[in-house]
Length: 165
Image (cartoon, rainbow, N blue to C red; front, side, top):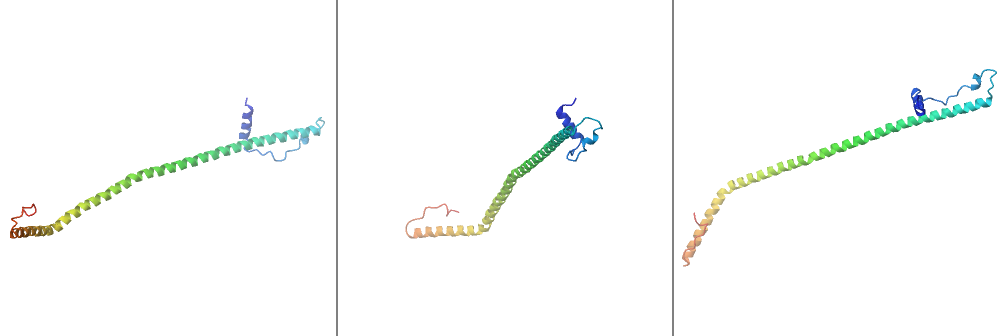
């Protein structure tokens, strides 16, 4: 035997959204002649049937509302999951940016360092003849100072490291 809630559920499943608002036939037409049913009894039966209709409609509407709420909750949960997945994807992308930027900056710094070494080597090559000329001039000045020292009766100058060849 089906329990009372089960009967209502079975009724609501068997008849999808019954409409009890339509006019029903007059019960008086179904009363056989000579039967002792008074119109007041028929009215009471009609009122009871109307009450049952109201209850059944309320149950069906309640079940429909419950199903709609479940659907809305599922949609809400799906939207939240989609938002979380989107944020996770962005965070993963952001986490990948740091190593990429670090690598780019290191490559840029390496190019600058290697170029600095090249510029230093080139400046040494370009300035080498001039440095030799300056060294010659410096030796010449040392020699001139030595001669001036001897001429001024001061004796020879102590030898400096720059005047030695």
